Image (cartoon, rainbow, N blue to C red; front, top):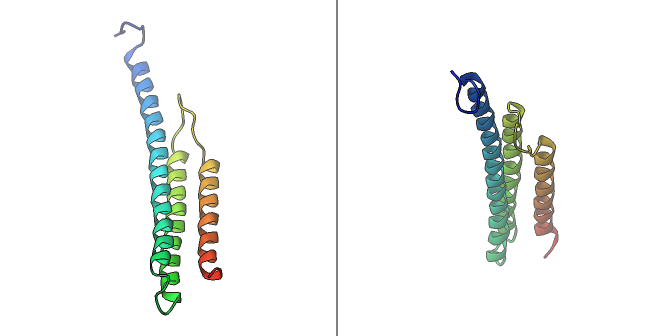
Length: 126
């Protein structure tokens, strides 16, 4: 049972499976990027909350709420990294360049460090 390319059904099925795995890898990267945006939005909400309610008394309340949002953002960064790395560990890239677990970890680390610096800055700076 050959097709016009000379490939039999098993070869075509294997090729379709490889392409599906590549699509899953790309979808995983898009999902990771979406979660990074969500984490950054949490950090932005925290900073915005602190700016809007800076004059609130006692002054620690807006800082505490802002810090909570920033920490939620950090949690989102690491939860996304863990989940994305688990997915990548089960897949093999065939026709696409895989982003790699180390790169995902580096992104989560940099964004977390930046968010924590912002949180510390909220408490240190007036």
